[in-house]
Length: 84
Image (cartoon, rainbow, N blue to C red; front, side, top):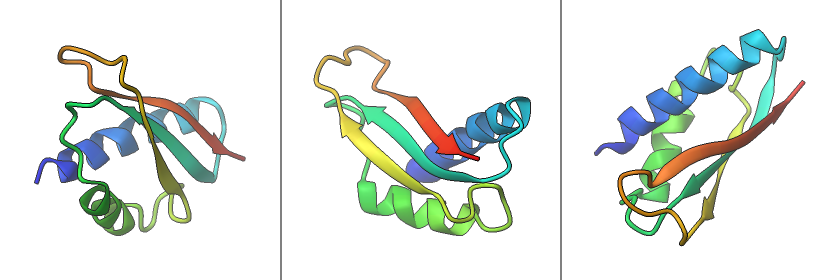
């Protein structure tokens, strides 16, 4: 169930960065996740599909990259996003 909160945080970070960099359309977000992130990819994408409507991420996808080196409380971060 925490995927909804994770998606909201991702979207807030990407939206702010897109505005600062004059990016009007985001089409890809790469999220790195650690082995203990407890992220359910299907739920993450389900929430993202709903919440992205009407935003600069409306046609974007989230790609997950597993990173076994992430330890402790830092189990995920936005690696990059692409847009124009």
